[in-house]
Length: 463
Image (cartoon, rainbow, N blue to C red):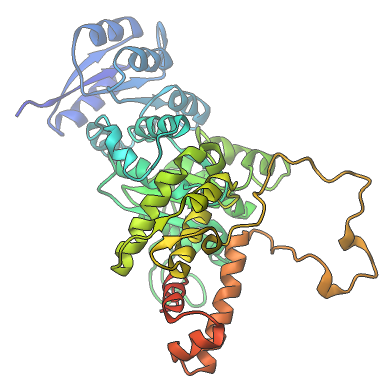
């Protein structure tokens, strides 16, 4: 079997020798170049599986190497070597298309992990992305192409978009289609961790480090070692934790609570939030330096109203999945019901579409979903409607209005779907407790069919 080949570009003989020895022990053949001119000549005339380049070269910059490879040899993974602490340079290289970076003095364990990951990079067939990103709209074609490209790198990515638009689906695809696909994907909802436990949850702790620490505990970074850590709702991180996260990303090392030493970490960071992260920075709720580290590349997820033409295909896919889960035939959707779906704006995006179809699945008769089964709003939600005129009076501001007549507001950070699910969960639990968990009696008490109750128990994880 032919050994892999790597091109090493550095003007310091000691560094070149160190890299050549390290890669040689990994059964990788190496060719060295001391400047941009010689490196470009080699890239134009020979074939390589990996390129390592210093950022500071006698006749130019490592960025020139990255740009040349991106244009001329796009399937060649290139990693850059930067001076310690010079993260701005590393970020610039990642934005330009570099696979990853390593800092001087070179940590050989980190270097070997980087090389192993880079050599696993392969082009991603579009069929792999279309399986879970349904739709033939132009915006979805563009999204699939972006994901296929981003999967090949180690660049930190900020997945932006509204609630329910599929941010975690995209993050999982980026992980699974990339060189870390066989390693752990660890998702964490940053808003769900109590602030006093956050450091321990992220970095772990050693036995006796605080009251209640009765044993060593692995943190999320350790659980994701070699894989991907997906920070969902990252805007909800408190400022104190943002500082610690920034250090872990920059140094590629972390210290467990109560431990005296740091340990190296090899984790790719993906993050998402439904909030506008730039606005959070402007408001002082999110650190600007962490924002730049996480948002090397932004991947915006389109809302469902931007791709209404995909709704029919999505609906068929969702109903097929639901029917398979219940072992029943898939219901049809009447033309009027489909028209209502495509006309509705879906502020909750794909998640709201799935919920509407699951609800309709339990309510429909004769295997056909009609408009009334969908329980959509009477009028489509028009996001382009102008704001209420400044001189029009808000009825809720009337001091004489009874409290129970005022419009309800959602708790901070809770979507409408989540709020309604919490209410539904409470009502069902109360009915079940009142009937000693007799599901038939509870369904009657709630005014729904036994089948509808069974569906809701599964959906709300109350089984």
